[in-house]
Image (cartoon, rainbow, N blue to C red; front, side, top):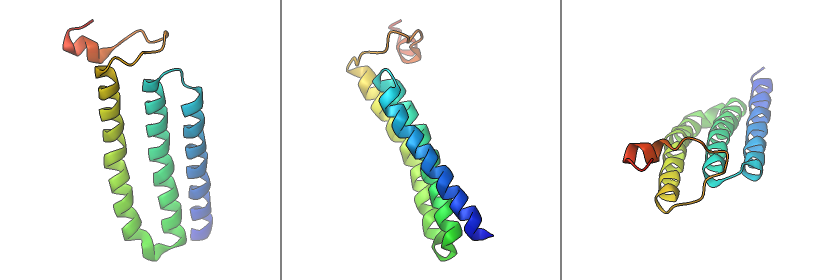
Length: 108
C-alpha cells in the first residue's frame, strides 16, 4: 500500500513540476513567472520528496529536512528576486493593474 501512495505522490509532484515549467513559458512578465515557478516547484518538490519517503522509509528523516529547507528557502528567494527586479525597474505586463510595493513606498 505504501508503494502505491509513494507512486501517486511522485506522479502528483511530477505534474506540479511540469505545470510550473509550463507557467514559466506562458506567463507574460518576470513577476508572474516567479510566482508560477515558485508555487509549483515548492509543492511539486514536496510531493516528490513525500513519494520518495513512502518508497524508502529509511530516508524519511533526511527527506523531511530537505523538504523543510525547500519550504523555507524557495518562497523567500523568489520574494527577494521579485523585490530586486522591482527595484531596478523591470517592466510589468500591461495587464498589471495594482503594484502594492510601489504603493507601500509611496510611488503610486
